[in-house]
Structures are given as C-alpha cells and as structure tokens.
Image (cartoon, rainbow, N blue to C red; front, side):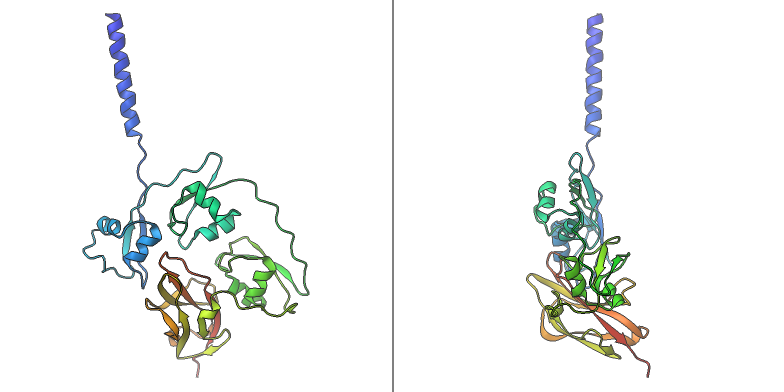
Amino acid sequence: MKKLGLLVLMGVLLLTVGAQTVRAEPSRASPIVHIVQWGENLTGIARRYGVSIQAIVNYNGLGNANRIYAGQRLLIPVAGPAPAPIGGCVYVVRPGDNLTGIAFRSGVSVATLVRINNLVNPNRIYAGQRLALPCAPAPPPAPPPAPSPGGQYYVVQWKDTLAKIAYRFGVSVWSIVQANNIANPNVIYPGQKLYIPGTAPTQPAPTPPLGCEHLTQPKSGAEVWGTMVAKGTADIPDFAYYKLEQRKDGLDGWHWIMSGDIPVHDGTLGMWDTRTVPDGDYFFRLVIVDGTGNYPPACEVIVKVNNDP
C-alpha cells in the first residue's frame, strides 16, 4: 500500500509540472501602432513591416483595403522578436531607422546584423523590433584629421542634422562629410564628435551629395515669398511616393507641405505658401521614398522667407 501511494503521488507531481510547462509558453509580441501618413497605402505599409496586406485588414477590421486616411491608427500584427545571443546586446528599432544606419552606429556590418537576427529581407524592419547586436569591444577610433586653419570639433546634439551644423559654422555639408569620412550624410547621432574644417578650401569642390540632383528649385540661399514653386525630379527604383517638407532653422521637427504618388521628371514638384509661416530662414527638402519605406539621402536647402512688403 505504501508503494502504491508513493506511485500515485509521483504521478500527480508529474502532471502538475507538465501543466505548469504548458502555461509558461511565451506570448506573442504586442502589435505595433502605425499612424498613416499622407500618400501612404496598405501596400507600402505592409512591405515596411514585412506582413501581408490581408493581415493588416483582418487585424483592424477594415472593410476596404483601398480606403485608409492620413492620421488613421493601424495595428500591425508582428511575430515575437528573436532572442539576443548569449553575451550579446539588444537594440530596439525606432521610427525612421533602417538597417544601414543601425549597423553604422553600432560599428558592425549590415551582413552581420542580417546573419545574427536571421533576417529574410534587410529592408524590412519595424519600429519596436528587437535586434541582437554583437557586444564585442569597439575598434580603436581612427586618428583625428590634421587640423586646417580655423578648424574645430563639435559634439552632435539632439535633433542636429549635418545641414544645420554646416549652416551654423558657415561651411558646406560635403566638407564635413569628407573631413569625418561619413558614409551616409543622413546618419549622425547625439554625442558623435565631428571635425568642422576651416572655411579655406584645400581642394576643388566635389560633386554635390546624393539627393541634391533631384531638387533644381529652390537653390540653397534663395529668398522666397508668396507661393514658392519647387521643381526637379522625383523618381527612383521601386518608387512609392515623394514629399516636400520644411522646418524653421532646423531646430524643430519636419513639417509636411505636400506629397505625390506619381513620378515627376524635370518638372513641378509642388508649391509652398510661405505666407503661412513667419519670415526667417527655413530648411526645405525633397524626400523620395521607395516601396520598402526607405529613401536615399534627401537634399536639404536653406531658403529665406521674406513676405514683409
């Protein structure tokens, strides 16, 4: 009888452990909230997050996949994040991130991030996604460039852009890019130490950075008033849409002016009623977005709004 009672007790314990194991199954990741922007459609949003259009339609109870509107909040169903390797670090993707920028800031290659996170498409990452990063010691920094007359160092602040920094010190964006061996002029981060060269040119000016060939009007430094007409070309491989944006002195966030989903070739891109903003210096840019939500470096020009008669 004692042996029988012991066997029954062991069986109950095994069933309890088994039940607890089932309850410990990991839960799915929470959905991401995406706020629809002007010019967006479900096809582009689905590509950006690596999910199907039907999955978004079903998750949000949409009656028509072709009817979404700017400002609408969509829930994006996503799979659970891949765990970080033992001894590794984790980076949480932020809105506007891409794998190239994350790899650049982390000192690793895109191929390394793709491999350790088992990514199928390096162009498909989403805000809130957790990416594993190798935590190996960073390589020693490259020696600083030889100082030129009037050169100095600057530590990047929150919301800085290269255009804003160049404007502040009276130099070109391209001179800062060259002096610091920057691979992507759109990728700088707070705390980064940049060498600002002197204003005296040491060699002929190179070709303008990628992106500036798309925008032919206005030119940087132009004085504008009333309704400003922007001209240029908006077309890249896998074109999705383009948008025109502005911000005051480069200090606040970008403000949408207009967008279009039809490619433009050497023509009118859109108009900006400058009377809706106070007079002063503004950054103006053209952003051309592809079907994956990525875009080449956008050319930022500085214009002076003057509507004072």
